[in-house]
Each structure stands twice: as C-alpha cells, then as structure tokens.
Amino acid sequence: MNPGGMDMQALLQQAQQMQQQLVEAQQALDDTEIEGSSGGGLVKVKLSGRGQVEDITVDPKAIDPGDSEETAQTLADLVLAAIRDAEAQVERIQEEKMGPLAEGLGGGMPGGGIPGLPGM
Image 1 (cartoon, rainbow, N blue to C red):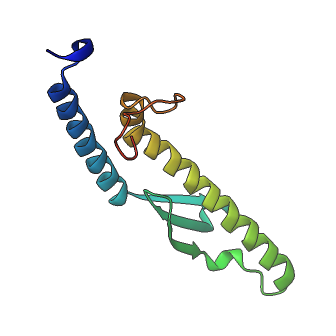
Image 2 (cartoon, rainbow, N blue to C red):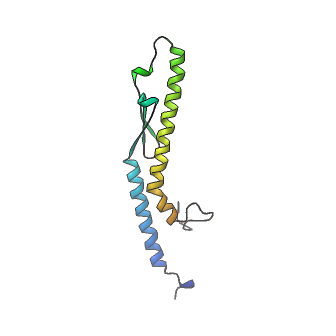
Image 3 (cartoon, rainbow, N blue to C red):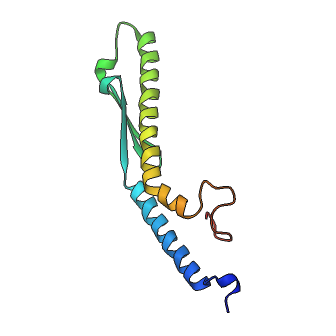
C-alpha cells in the first residue's frame, strides 16, 4: 500500500524524464549562438546560449583617428550596449528552453522543486 496514495515508481519515472529534458535543454543552449549589436551594427557581440561572450567585432568605421579619447569612450559604450543586447536575447532563449522545465519542477515558487533531488 502506498502512503498518501503516492506512486513512488511513477514519481521517480517522472523525475527521470524531467532530468533528461533538462539535459537536452542545456545541450540546446550550448549549441545556440546569439549576436547582439549596437551603433547600427558597428559593434557586434556573440554569446553562447549560456551567456558567455565568445566574440566581439568592431567595424573600423567606429574609429575616428582624429579623436582617440572620444573614440575610446564611444567604443566602450557601444561594446557595453551590444553585450546588453545579446544578454537580453540569451535571457529570452533560456526562458524559452528552460522555463517550462522550471515550472514543471515548481521553480519560482518558494519551496518548489522535488525534495531530495539536486537542482530540483
């Protein structure tokens, strides 16, 4: 007889399925590349689906050889804006891939998740 009518085998099977879905979603994020840009494309930043900066490209048109101090500040601002653009896209993609799993595990709810399972 199951205490409280809980089918532990079904619960374990569900947890294993969710764990597999989580692994698949993480792999999909690893395989995703996101590009953010600023200054009308003068600066581009590529991030992995997990938010790690992979590459930064600066168009030579963004550089004013006659005013290096102003150019340096402008480039810093453009790089920061491009990173923020890419990070916003990463957040949307992560929510798209991982959000349904977190909801299924009770994520976002205090005390949510599956007790006794790491990360759940």
